[in-house]
Length: 201
Image 1 (cartoon, rainbow, N blue to C red):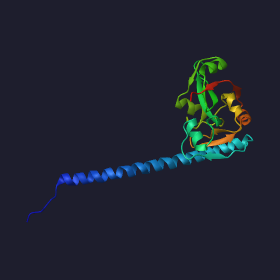
Image 2: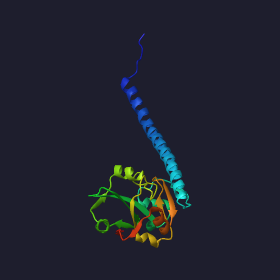
Image 3: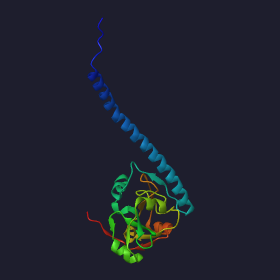
């Protein structure tokens, strides 16, 4: 009796089709897992920062955003606030001293490095990711204005004083907290300065 073995090429195509159908599912599962992990980390960072804020006498609620805000535009969109109410945390590095410099700038502005260099007395450049994490304890996109391993010299964009309330990162791109200009100066022991120019629309 002759046994029909079937066509191997058809079987292979069916296997490939099944695998291709499973790929989007696996990718979605990985995205979901990564999102859960990010939110757990955001919560942990938020709790830690809330404790530091309370210890500093600032009672602020950590707000978890609907997604990661890696720019002032994204943060303003999630919060439904003006771009100028976002306090960007930008870390620079002195070219000679190699020391970190934290600049809190309005989300509506662009830091003017010429002004910045005149204020600090040396050339500066934007710090790379590893340097930022080493000196702040946070990743780029979630650098809080306080809670660093050591005190950072901080300059604060004067334009932030025009806002009744401002929002700053709370240690993770998913989290922020609300404060005002005076509180920002007090919490960071920062110096208000003319460090920025209005960004082009």
